Length: 329
Image 1 (spheres, rainbow, N blue to C red):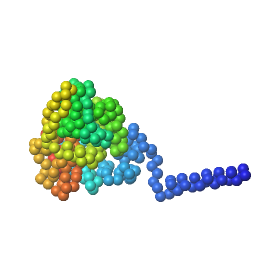
Image 2 (image 1 turned 180 degrees about the vertical axis):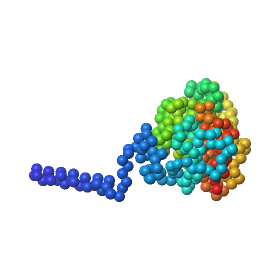
Image 3 (image 1 turned 180 degrees about the horizontal axis):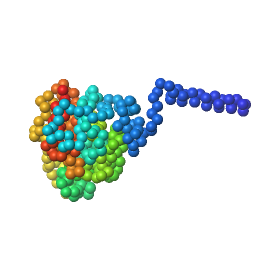
Image 4 (image 1 turned 120 degrees about the horizontal axis):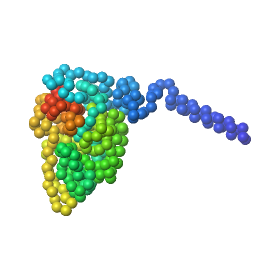
């Protein structure tokens, strides 16, 4: 009987080994480099060539291996901005790319990821109660004016976040969704990695400057491409103005109006006649320069995502973005 047991044991082992060989043998490509978020040399890395990518990651996404020149350039020249990209979303084709993998500060472009995490983990009518974290004292920081104890819905806070770019709205959302800014940032970084944004790291939900808070233009495309899958997000970024009332700490109602920071929606910047700007997100700090990520559609309704980062001033930012939109045929 002991001999039979031994034979069965070895037979089972052989069958198991055969099954493993079938799964990992001929006909499948083996990626010898393991996934490592701390290096650009990785099977998962966004800077790897298209032939070296795992198919599930690259499928349906634009892939860039080198700069793609434009047929036109703004008069101020390429030195006036840090990086720019334009992607044809439906066809997964890059149209223009300059320094798309450069590590740059995102400023308030950060709030696109804040919105993603909020939409993924919250509902429009969830109540947000502001904590002391909304008392931001950094000079020049854009603020909605929220105070500790103020109560509003997540939807109201999201309008302040995406339209007016309120830094206090961002921390109010973070505390409301995750209980603390730190825990919310953990969710932001987890989401970034899940999207393949391996060149990104967040330490706050608003984009106020920190040397350890950074992204790349390509990662911003990945993040924004995820955000525009939500109707909630698209509705807000397309609005020029929004007026609402929320409860203050003393129980009274306070009316507030948020106007968009997007000059295309304001009418202060004009896109090419064949292009419709749906909306996007602006971001500006001294260290980051002027930044803009945009969703637009061509005459046939096909979506395009464009990003300009580290422009020297707002005029150059919108000149470059309009130049990019001119590449949409």
